[in-house]
Length: 123
Image (cartoon, rainbow, N blue to C red; front, side, top):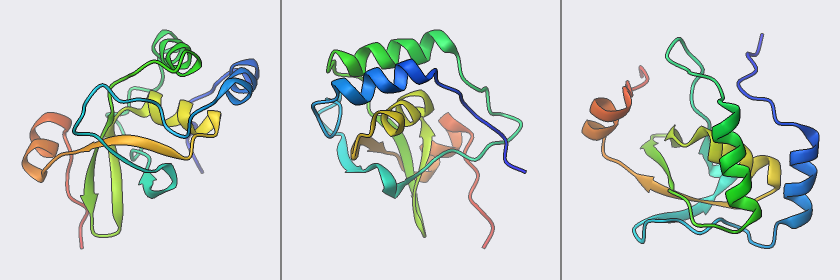
């Protein structure tokens, strides 16, 4: 059984797809790295998952529609790829809009654990 993490109105998706002119939104941080969005795994859904806030999602959608700069998403490298730690609204809005790339700030393990509650997967 899969838990639905987000839901975006179809009219938002259609508007995003029709107006998208970039392959990646401009990040606020110069240190961000653009990676293929398909290379980034979404967060694991667990008890700490807050779900989606419609106002926050609307703000992200507005930013994408206006080609505004926004904070890069935050991720950590694992053995089998990158995992999203922060930025689920941006990540899912970019997926819905058809973006090919996403700006990422990669953090080391100690910061991922302390700031984002990350726990390493068991081997």
